[in-house]
Image (cartoon, rainbow, N blue to C red; front, top):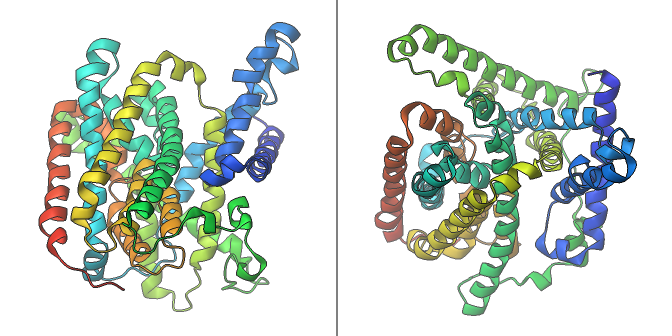
Length: 474
């Protein structure tokens, strides 16, 4: 693959991001759903690529014609397919860079109720998924039981986690799981926004929101995804002088160091396993662990080092988030643009069962547990966790933005504290990364029992500990 092909593929990707933005500006439905331009652009690429436009034009123009692949050539598709697995490492390496880690006591007090609620939903997704796999997918469709992990991977983890596990799926002999997980992640984002807005409207009518904010109060510019002139702010702080090093280059390099630390950890784990428990038990799990959760650990370790030795505070969080946001946009548009429609079609019934099971569990958990676990500002706080459990963190933040636009409740702060403990494990963390290889190596039933116990612990702590505490309004 030549550098010219890779470069041109990136240019075309940028065009589809702009196409997604223009479509959102023109289509009011997409504005009302607050759909990211990357998702819209990804679907545009999918429709104009070889699987839709190419297949439609191939019989007319001939199999050897340029049009037989649509507007994406075979080489461009190969480049796009590799990008999600690379970008997810950047996203996870930057999760904690530039953040000041608060005390565990403060995290537990402020974010504990939402941690218990999110923990219950996350582990519950494994329980529901594995039950569907063991009772239906494996006996009737001959699908490996590890398909039961796809709900949590697609819904909680999102497109990035699904993309990061592509190599793991292939190594374990279930490559179709990648397309199913990407499809579930897409369904999760769409249903998260749709059902989230429905729940908000119902809560407003019932008076369940203390900060009642109807979507109609969003300005036209907000719906278009454009900041008002008076609300525009800097994308980052110039912590270094440009004649020394470009600040953006410095931050990109720091993220690269975090990824390299993660890579060193990955190779160390593989090496230790190869000379210790691996030969003794004939069970090898570390080989299948993807890089991205360890890149996150690398980011945490690097930040701990910076907290102690970087007296000039050279790492700016907003600058890191811009790199993270760019990587996420690239990941989503390329992952959706190259999703295999043939795989979704071949496994449509299993895909539908997993999607319905995941959505049903999230809605049920929200209605049954949220108010009992989070007694004060329960809706404003739990709607963010619901959004994250359906799609990505951004979905949760969007829903919280709708019900609490001026940040008058502790919802946003508590959500952030919850993420510090939650993300290293679920939603793309170590548990998410290990789930598939563990199920493959040890079996689905032991993991199902463990997931049920974890979900039960989250439920019990939420109901009987946090649910009994009165939190003072802020």
